[in-house]
Length: 110
Length: 135
Image 1 (spheres, rainbow over the protein chains, first blue to last red):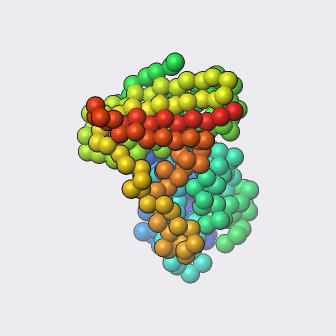
Image 2 (cartoon, rainbow over the protein chains, first blue to last red):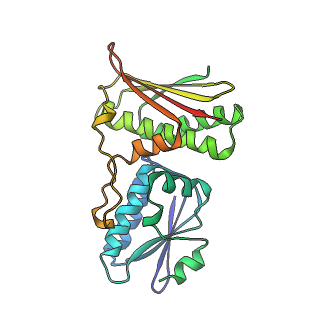
Image 3 (cartoon, helix red, strand yellow):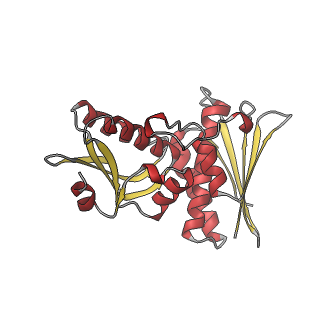
């Protein structure tokens, strides 16, 4: 389940449950839809995601790459619990991602 | 030893993970260690679906889990093509984001989340993957 909220400069994508190979395409579709609308400043609210697999990491990193090719574009993470941080840490990718404690801080970072 | 067989399809990943997470917690693993077992199993099963079975959507994965005083052992059996983990490229991180290649991330997660990961291509066909996590 993926919901998107548009602010003036930033879009917040909130997903819930598991992000694995079964569910990651829905998340990718949400990101692709925003990029098609030339929205490149994105926050993913992970407060309700309890599992992140490599497929989810793949979607996040590939979206982040596309955002960062644009001026001031980025995809940042908000409210990632210990499990999500564990996946990013084990993948060796934590330093590629900007992780904020909550959505407000993430939105204000742009 | 709890054992279940699942159809090798993405929609079953959540059920397979629930199965191993429940067994890990029943064995006394805390939430963080149970998550590692769940993550490694998810990556291993995804790998089986994508590489051992590929286009074959009729494949099965047999998942067994055994707990003892040392920890938890997961055994995944499939009947797909032989899988050679030595051919999976290692990840390189000393590159700009745009050049970051994520191939090999699943294997990296499995090895990071578990203490031992052992692949065997069986002469009778298929593969057996044994993963252990110590207490």
